[in-house]
Length: 145
Image (tube, rainbow, N blue to C red; front, side, top):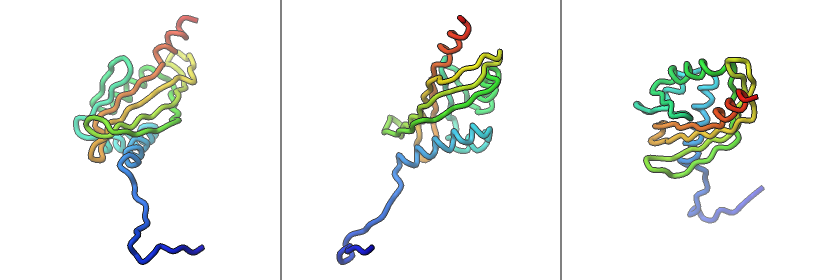
């Protein structure tokens, strides 16, 4: 295949966008947490970054976040279905949506539970994470049956 690019005045190339880099950072953070490599995940976060989950639970250390989850779930899996990035106050917001499945500590299973994480990214680091899910509604429904 041949092409004519003219007399050198046209530059053809590809470049990563800031949004794509922010999405990759969120994806890599999730991968590290799912592998239980909390040190790698923490290295992607800015000093003072926090994780806030449904119910207003806030964590400054990923070890505390993991310990909280270990108290609630015998098994926990997150399936990410979509990554989106947009400008936000203080940086770029990356939204990740998907479903949860697993087993509560009492043995009750759950699946197809919706979740959404919002990562605020600035200067190549995660400065805030907020996560929401329907797990409380799922748990309440399981307890009612």
